[in-house]
Amino acid sequence: MFKLNRAVVVLSIGLAMSAAGAAGVAGTPAQYGSQALNATADREIAIDASTKWINVTDGETVQFTKNGHSFTWHFATLNGETSFQLSQIAPLEFNVEGLRVLRVGRDSCKNTQITL
Picture 1 (cartoon, rainbow, N blue to C red):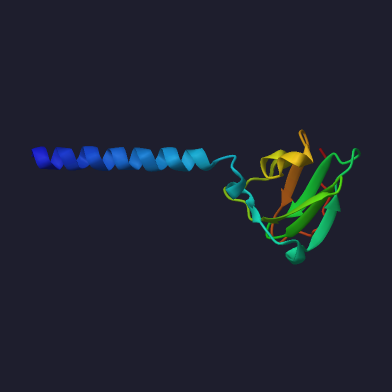
Picture 2 (cartoon, one colour):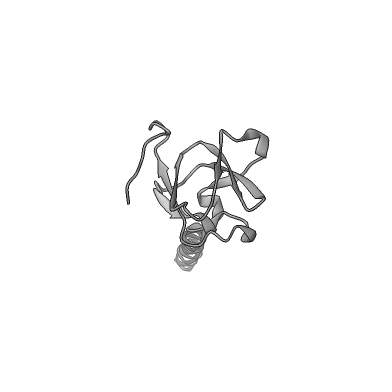
């Protein structure tokens, strides 16, 4: 009986640690995709002072440019995320606080406009 209770305790602790680890993933760059090579970009988005939000399609690879800097990101969102802050994936030199990425489903038209 003691061995069974011990096994249940060990299993419970393991499951709790797994759940805590999964919860820690939320809001990390990996949740939204991964960096990619510039040559693999489907399109380029130039960010300037007038940019309020960015529409992307799940599965799309986008090269972002701002003030002579660039980075490329392949969007593969988890958990049905539909929007997030670009600053969560952008390098620090981009300074894009407040700029949101709006994700449209994989099968949606890339030109779909989302109004805030």
